[in-house]
Image (cartoon, rainbow, N blue to C red; front, side):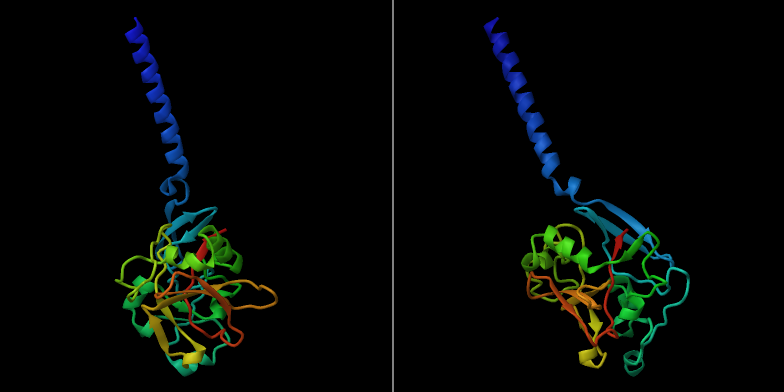
Amino acid sequence: MKKKNYLFIYTLTILFVCIITTSNCEKDDPAVNQTENGTVSDIDGNVYKTVKIGTQVWMAENLKTTKYRNGDVIPEVTDNDEWGKLSTGACCTNNNDADNVAIYGRLYNWYAASDSRKIAPAGWHVSTYDDWETLTNYLGGFDVAGGKLKETDTIHWKSPNTGATDEVGFCALPGGGRYFLRGFDFTSVGYGGTWWASGTIGGIEAWTWYIVNWETAIEVDYLISGKQDGLSVRCVKD
């Protein structure tokens, strides 16, 4: 009789420990609670992977659309001089190479990213300064968030791709850009990615967030005279 009681108590103890352990794993498992995969399509029919990070749902790929939400075409401009004179929306492909679209998406000037016709799919918006700040804080701050967002390995990122873990499935890619300071030549593919942040902060428009291959940080800056810059775009669910 004593032996049966001992086995009964032992069994209950093991069961209790298993329940507590399982509960803790479900609570802390980032795959269960921090990320949620899905898809969204744009007006061109491009399908993007999406990921839930904290309270936000982000595209896990850079935008590729050639049209605004209402169907109007976003002009594609290949010539550097013509691009630099623009004061209306335009898009391009890095190095004018169509093969780059599938990997890095398209590059857009500020006028396209902020156009009232909207380049994000319905129910989504071009990521804002606040969206990026929330994401950065969720991942531990400016010093480490870049590494946690970067795609791992050096297939697309140039070595050393410092600290890249992509631990939340954001898959930040080094799509480079078309910069005012470089005469609107295409540059930085493999070395860095820069994304527009929509909205106005402190009376300043044209904020950008960028990540590079040699550090784990994410940086923020504003472009007073760089609204013609061609940069990547990520969208966030409304």
